[in-house]
Amino acid sequence: AFELPEDSIARLAEHPRIIGIKDSGGHPVRMQRMIASVPADFIVFTGSTQAITLAVAAGAHGAITASTNYIPEKVLETVTSARRSANKARPLQQEISRISAAVEAHGIPGVKAAAGAAGLQAGHPLLPLSSLPEPESGRLRALV
Image (cartoon, rainbow, N blue to C red; front, top):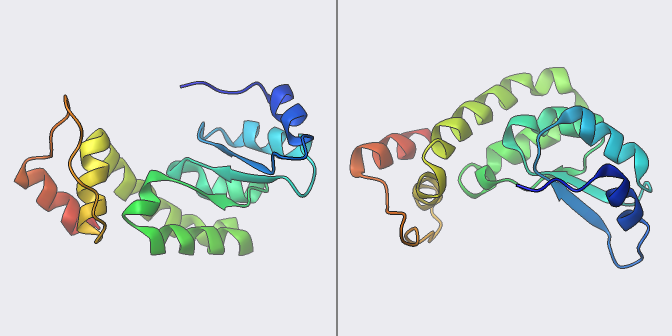
């Protein structure tokens, strides 16, 4: 993974054809500094399910996460709740963090299985990866 330096993000935010960024690092203090260094109309999203509430509290616009593919309503509810009160969003954050940790522990095959369980046509993982065996897929279906 590559993390853009914060000063580079601030410079890129001044470019007229760049309107936002997705930061997947999940570091709330970095997110807070990043948001403070860009213009108010520059849109910042978190890409970390585990950090949605903290990122929104720091000023992030929302979230673009893998978990949005398999628990979209829960992610939206967490973002909406976090905009009102980070404290009240805590139980939602804990739930989506628990679900995403279980799904993403299986990597791409887990995300594809969960997205399929949520009704998307996720397809199969590309080689050398393979689909999850049924016991694991069943556990993920129960979570989603």
